[in-house]
Image (cartoon, rainbow, N blue to C red; front, side, top):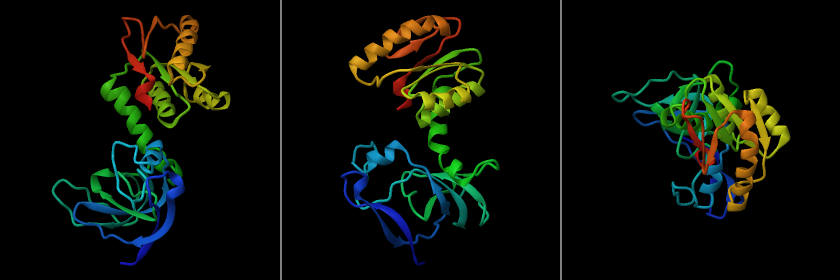
Amino acid sequence: MGTHRAAVCTALEGPDCVTTRHVPNVEASPGTVRVAVRAAGVNYPDYLLTRGQYQLKLDPPFTPGMEVAGVVAECGPPTEGSTPWPIGTPVIAWTPGGGFAEQVVVSSDAVFPLPEPFSHAEGAAFTVAARTAYHALVERGGLQTGERLLVLGATGGVGFAAVQLAKLLGAQVVAVGSDDAKLAAVTAAGAGHVRVSMWYSTPSGETLLRKRFDSWRGEAGISSWDSPAARFPPSKPIVFCSRVFR
């Protein structure tokens, strides 16, 4: 089967312990697809994995990488309910690990067509952030048209995706971040109100953000701040907090 290159974590001491190695190719087993990787997304959990601090614990050596874009190189024998993928199909895929490599084998159910407007790089950066935002806002939060949403950490991957998704759902978005340049992109993505705040994950930072939020809420039409969530007028109930986005 030959070999391919992969970024392998050799010790749980952080990214400095990730090195490029040649590893054996793996054939696609029943119900799986082997993807020739053209781009891989980098997410904060990948960093945590290299330190053994993520909820998924992997023993070295292992290859991080949770989302990729590329083309189908091989499709394993079908199983009941699995999706056959023609060789050469442009796809995006998510995986618990192994994405930082020239190829990766994933479940056929974790493979999706690469949207036509997307480059491989855009596709590789889409799955984790967009799925997380969708799960939070739609599946758990039930965000509705006309409701107001406060997004803390709006300049991060999931926060930015949440702003875009909320706008598409017809919500009004208040975005908080720590960088003016990044917040300009958030405004372009659909946030109606943006504010700069210091890091707020500490008690002192949350207290300062609470005070600043109280000064913003009149302009944004928000009724109250109920830490750690922002609660909006009773006629438009929505509860969201920064911890959802991290």
